[in-house]
Image (cartoon, rainbow, N blue to C red; front, side, top):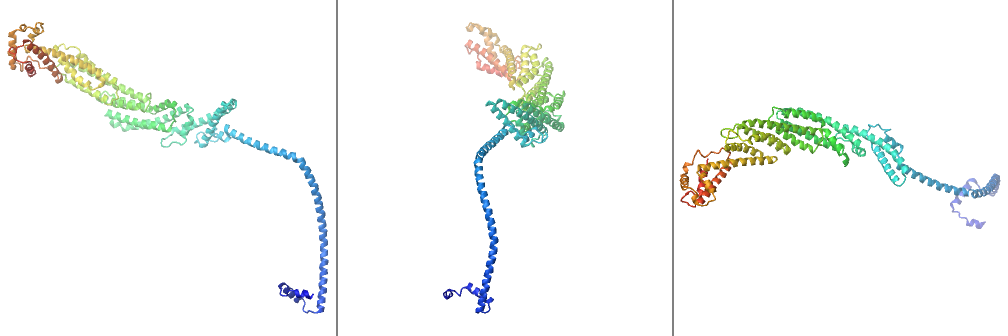
Length: 596
């Protein structure tokens, strides 16, 4: 005990606190107090133990109940375990079957996906079908991208069907293809109706973005494209006609100048045609479909059909006015011919406007030819009575001036066909040539030839300017050459008579080369006559040729050469400078000096 007290650590805080509590309970530390405290403690200990026992009885009962429950649960678990083993043994086939079913379900799901993909590849869903059938969209409503996606899918299905048919699935592919074809026709019909509405009001500056795509689908149906071209050209035809009438009203002030008026009107039509053709190519652009070129050309021609009648009426009333001069009509015709060739590069030749223009040009050319022929016939009456100076009458020169102006106007455009120029030219000059081809009874042979040359030479100057009249030019040159030869022959004979050489011609042509064949007195007389050249100057016996300078020069040259050649033969035959004192060179100079 003491040893235990010695071991106690009185500085321990817990001990100090316990002692302090005990000090609070007991004021005095006496034997009685301690005994009393001991009794109280023992009693309290007994009470505590008693309470503990009472409490433990309830716990023991509860533990017993728990034990019973646990034991019952254990027994149940053991029984359940046995049952589970039994169930496991009996359910194992079911698990195996379930696993097989799971695998089968996965396979079926994959097949369903493949089937869905197959259906998606070869069928349209309800929404896509409704879009193509226009059930949810009225035909006049703007097409959408969904519509074209559905149509693209439909066409893809048809291509797939063609591949299926190639692989041997003809029946299945044919049924699917036919059902898609029905939808496709209805879709194309809707596109066509929508495009009709678009082209009626189409503006090159405001084209619907889906129009060109729509046309691409319709290219498989040329009839639809043809109708669209007709629709567009008909709509634009009325617009062009209205604008043309406005242009005609503005050009009224130029009616007094037909070539300018016609040129301005045709220039407007040319510009309008270019604009309309460009607009048509933009609005109804086709991607290289050459099979529709005829349809396109027909539509282009229809653009100007509306202006054919008013143009024809105005142009005929203006250009074919009987009061107009031929030169004015020729200028108007040249303008029309130029634009006609220009229009051929823009519009199809069969369109009514170009047919009307071609008829107009032909009518103008026909009238010009008729008028020139009438004019030439009238002039030919003046030519039947030659003037005293054998010159071309003023009326004839005026006719040639008008004829030349007409030819120049027609050829200036370089578009009037050469055949037409020849026809007009021949109709004008044939009456003249028919007069010239016959001899003039009141004239001598020489005067007849001179008068013919004076008529033909101015005509030749006009025709030689035009390549289309080359044949007629050669004919005129041949006639002039023939007449010049006639004049030269007569004039040569006249000069031989005047200079006294005519009497020596028989001797010169004689085969005898002896000088004695010439009469000496005649030679002496000739020599004396030639020495005194003054007797020939101004001689009335030498005709003053009434020819134009070129022909006159040609006649004189030919005649002088012929006479000089004869004198040279005579001079060489005589072989004596004492007999003929004038040399051949001097004789030629003498001839040229005395010829008027």
